[in-house]
Length: 220
Image 1 (tube, rainbow, N blue to C red):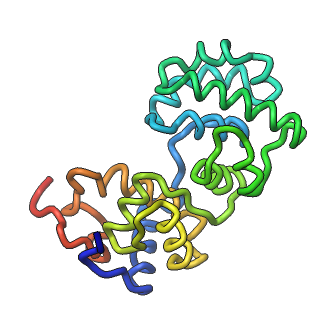
Image 2 (image 1 turned 90 degrees about the vertical axis):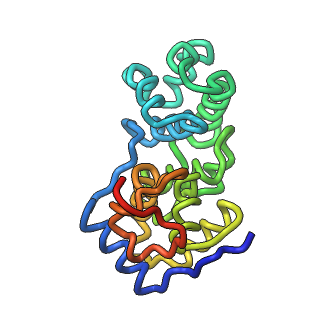
């Protein structure tokens, strides 16, 4: 189905991010981690799970484990005891042990800093790789999750039928000046304001720039 509204202009995109920056100059992801390895583990665990649920499960895990070697020493069954409250924990445990082994075998236990190398790890797709590149290595990339996919299409930042289409559109249309922090600004906007069922348009700080034709009215 084709969009029923237009893309934002470059001027509107600039205003959009100027506003988000003024309200939150240093946006942060909500997953808790201690280094690039624990970030990778947390992001793998977050698939089809809430950040809050992942943080609760990893609070004790990350006191014991902070390297691939320590994860391998803990083992799959040991890991499951920490993450069993998270959905799909059996398959996630297998992936985390497998990616830890590959990190030791192929990367001397270090987290690689390229998307292709990250995607060579078991259980790591493009979205997970982009999160790690952005949050751990400060690379100006955007990981398109359900929140960013919705916000981009709804506001007119970028249109796309797939996450990859939206990612390419955002990378093309957002100025390099904003790209490093755009990932977190858009996720937070989607999570707390531009919600899936009932967006909070009346209190949205970027409602004027947004091109969504079905904005909610009145008080919320």
